[in-house]
Image (cartoon, rainbow, N blue to C red; front, side, top):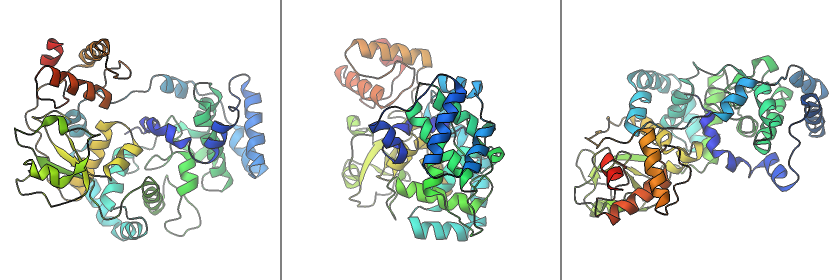
Amino acid sequence: MPSAVRLALAATLLLSGTALTFAQDAKPQCGGDFGQFLDGVRKEALSQGMSKAAVDAAIADMHLDDKALARDRAQGVFAQDWRQFAGRMVNSYRLKIGKEKLEKYADVFAKVEAETGVPAPVITSFWGLETDYGAVLGDFDTLSALATLAHDCRRPELFRPHLLAAIEIVDRGYLKPDEMKGAWAGEIGQTQLLPEEYIKFGTDGDGNGTIDLRKDTPDVLFTTGKYIQSLGWRRGEPWLQAVKVPANFPWERAALVHKEPAANFAALGVTKADGSPLDDDKLPAALLLPMGRDGPAFLAYPNFDIYLAWNKSLVYSLTAAYFATRLAGAPPVDMGNPAPGLSVEETKRLQQRLTDLGHDVGAVDGIVGENTRDAVRDEQKRLGLPADGWPTKDLLSAL
């Protein structure tokens, strides 16, 4: 699973470390002669206390990477509906290998959970989706890709701090320059963390004196656990639960932004997927209907927000969270019989129509995000339809 889509959370990274300095001060230099740009990077790295030998080694083979720039210009988002994406990603192979990994590294996972509170299936879900447990790490030259994206004037305030952090990885001796291979946007390792995350949360999980997120599994698991913990993981609490919703449910209350105690949903007839009563839980939850009222249904608890912090795409986040429940022993969710969704072009037509009606759907991009779903609910209510937020051909025709 290419992890460059995780740059959807990039704005949050501007709140930490070097990125904040750039946000407060003048923008870092970008564009112009690439050699002069690298001279500026060299001076900045040296001013941060990195050794001249490491900095020179890291910069020696940096070059402009046209492929990284092209990927940045044309990065895709999740246009598939949830059933298509989850069906493809949460497959029998990933479940089988994931359970084998849980057993093989049980002792390591136990230590990680004791220290961070993050359960093994949660870490393993990201591990499996991002790189198939380390099998697909990416083949972009990390240093050159980051140098290219930092030199480009589209988002230098995001990529320059990661470029400096990548040089620091070399300075600390974690990886040699020629070992730094990963995704096009600079993510490295088996769970595809960005260089600043590597530096901040990197942990020597097996005590061998270094931190290698490409090849050393204990390092990967500890580091990923600490990163997830930093996003606000709440120890001992659930993250997602498949549920059954009655036909007379007030569908407008099924929205990611609408959170209330799970007990309230129980009072409205929502049950566990097997029909048994929900636990009398005061935890806030949101009822998610990724395919509308006739498709699968989930209660998303506060820990689900960590998945959205990892990747803002609801399709990806819900898939990863569902994958983790399966690894934890939950049965497959009932996919139901949802009304067919719209094609990308039909979704763009719908978004344009909603925009014309005065709704803020964000970009007209063919992606059914939360803004589009909110607008759909409003129009469904106006038209006297069940307001489940799922855009269908009938709704498009009605509009």
